[in-house]
Every structure is written in C-alpha cells, then in structure tokens.
Image 1: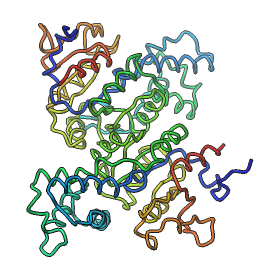
Image 2: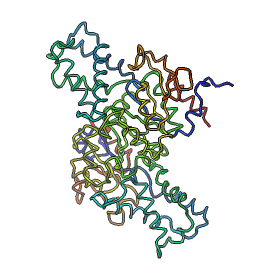
Image 3: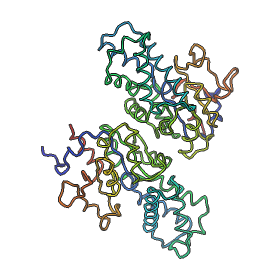
Image 4: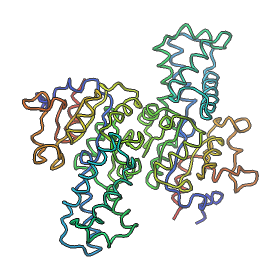
Length: 265
Length: 265
C-alpha cells in the first residue's frame, strides 16, 4: 500500500536515534494555556476589557527577544522563571503601557503566581499520544528554554512522557545558542546526524540544522511568528518547491510524525 | 487502624516535595543485572570457572573508589561510561590479575559492549510500582553517578518513570560532592529541607544530610559495602536505638515508602 507520507522521504530520518522537542507552542499550547489562566485571575481582580491574547503575545514576544539576546552573550537570568517575572513586571508597571492599571493590583506573590502560569499548560490534542508512540521507537527529550522546574511541572501537569528533560538552564544560556544543541547531543552520546529537532518555529530548526541535526517542522495554528501571517500551512520542507532548505520534513501533528517513524526499517 | 509505619514518623518527611534516588543498587539490581550479562558473554567466549559476582564486585568497588576521589578534585573522566571502561581495562589487562586471561579475548568493540552492560539493568521487584505510586505524590528524580545516556537507557529498559534525570555528569563531578545535592535542589527550585535523598548506601545519605536534605534508607540485599557484612537489616534510623543520626527513616522497599507518603496529610 502506498504510504500517505510520500512527501516525507523516510531517508530524511534514517538512522535518527533521538528526537529533541521544542516545548512552548510545539508540544504545549502555550498561548491557550496562559490565556485561560490569565482570564481566571483577571476575573478574581475584576479586571475587564483586557485582550489577554494580546497580553500573552506581548509577554511571549519579549521573552523571544530577550532570550535571543542572552543566547548571544547579553547579560540576564538564564532561569526562565526569573526572566518571565522581569518581563511581566515591565508589562504591568511601565507608564503608558496598555496594562499599567494591572500593576497596582498584583503584589509580589500574585506576580509569581501568574509567572507560574507557564508551568501548567496542556499539550496540543495529539501531543501525549504522539510522544508515547515515538518513545517506543527512539529517545524523546525536551529541549527547551523553560527552566528545569518549569519543564518538570509541565510534564506532570500535561502527561508528557519524556525520557530526558534538557532545559537550556543546564547550559546557562538559551536557544538558539549552538552550545545547546551540541551539549544535548553529546550528553546522549550521539553524533548530531543521529539527532532530530522537532519544532513549530523555523528559527529553532535553522539553529539545529546549523549544528548538524535533522529537522522536523510541526505546523501549529498561529504559532510561528517568523512566517507570514503566522500561517504555518505555508511552510514546506526542502524536498518541496519553495521549501526551506533547513527543514527536512514537515508534519501536521506528533501522531503523523510517529506514523512516519513507524514506516522506518 | 494503626499504621504499620509507626517507627517511621511521618513528620520526618512532612513538606517534602521531591525525592532524589540513587539508582545503582537502590532502584536497580546492579549486581544481578551485570552478572547475568557477563555470564552470557563469557559463554560466547567459552570463558569458564570465573566467579562473575566477584568480578562485578571488583568493578563496582573500583568505581566507588575512583568516583569518590574525582568528587574531591582528582583528575579523571566525569562521564561514567569512560570511567567504567578504564576500570574494565585495568581488571582484564593487568598482569597477575585474576582476570588477565580475559584481556586478549575482548577487543575494543566487545569491551564497549561489556561496559554498556551497566545500561541494561532491571529494577528490584518493587521499584517500578513504587516509583509510579510515588510519582503521583511528589516529584521523583534520579540523582546518580551514571552518565545521562546510561540513566536514559536504563529508564527505558527497566521502565523507571522519572520526572527528571539528574546525572552528576551535568555537574561535572560525582557524588558525594556537595555541589551535586545543592545543584539538583536548586534546579527544582526547592530549599534542601523539601528534598529527600533515597539510597541503599549510608554514605550517600550522609552527604545528602550534610547539605540539608531529609534522608531515606532502603534496605537492599548485599548492597551496602559500608555496613558490617553488607547486612542492611542492621541499619536503623535516628529514631531507633543505635540508629544512624543522619538517616531519617528506613524502609524495605519503594512500595513501603509510597505507603509512608500515602499517610501524609
């Protein structure tokens, strides 16, 4: 029978022994999870007419900018909780910010509580089943900018069955610093070509490919800030016309990825 | 109904949020697993009348001595696979050694194969069930001198459901260096008194207690070289007459430990 994955040549993943997963947005529905919790705490403080999607996006975008800066040697906390707290403070304490009226309402304890919203996030509908199936075939490891504690909390909350949790905190930097990909492969005693990075962001895959990893793009709705209109359906692999040369295969879910690996010899 | 664990005051573990486990000998039946594989490879090479228990013990004792030396600043590999290979070579290549006739039989590839015997070890009969029950109550993490890859391989082989794998390789030293216990607690964002070390070796617990951890001794047959005749049944907690002051509670299995935590408020 013809495989439904003919546009995903098995050869692209032949010999891969470990999959490394971006977590925020790729495995976990970060925006949905954070917004749901923000709405709850907002109602507790009777905060009305705030677009929490916009707030979560602003938090996320600042996180992306600052971690990238630190990853190329700027100063700053390499524990993501501390960094997320700093950004939260700047969003709600800055004069003239859309959210400045929230500042006086949340004390130190509540701000830490809100920061921890990033710890309690569920997977996308396919994530737990997909990871569980993949775990039977290869090693599966988180490779995320989240702190160790954040990733452990999230795995317990969401049921992610990691074989290993690689937080960039262990390497005292963030993705896309090359040391992250190099160190994770080395700690699993694998040459990079036996490793594949799985992410919903073309930039993460570009950095992983630069270190010799194979790369797997997962399409997630409204998630990849670096593609036009965040429209992941436009992203194609290098084997397709107009595809990204640093992307080996593209899948629509982790279950589809498990099916691709099932086809492997 | 009276608890069967009256000699294990719950208070000793009140507030504990994470359990850190020694793996070799405590969670995994290291000697049994290594000896079984050594016997198989011996029969392949027609090696007869070798006491593989004695061989495994010698390997283990050297491992203990050298890791301890490196943990207090001697030079040497902090990747345990490399260290285990060096010790294996010294056992079978040394003139006058009981095992010198093995040296010429095993080439480089076979020696690495034999070194990896430490990766494929099953749990004690209670380990998987005990860990699974404990995981529902607190965070459970490996805290072992094994390399990251070794601990990941063993967890897959034996089914250990770790929330986090802390290999001392991540900290570039070995237990009992205090930095190991300090770093693991810090990465889970916990003060040491909310952490408990679980081990079948009084020395590991002594080091953990020195950094402020609670301590749980698990009795394993013939496993603790530091107690008389390796008789773990003689080990008692500080609340018992003649007990060790650095041991908070003693259990006979991980299932018993899960029952103790079940009693907690």
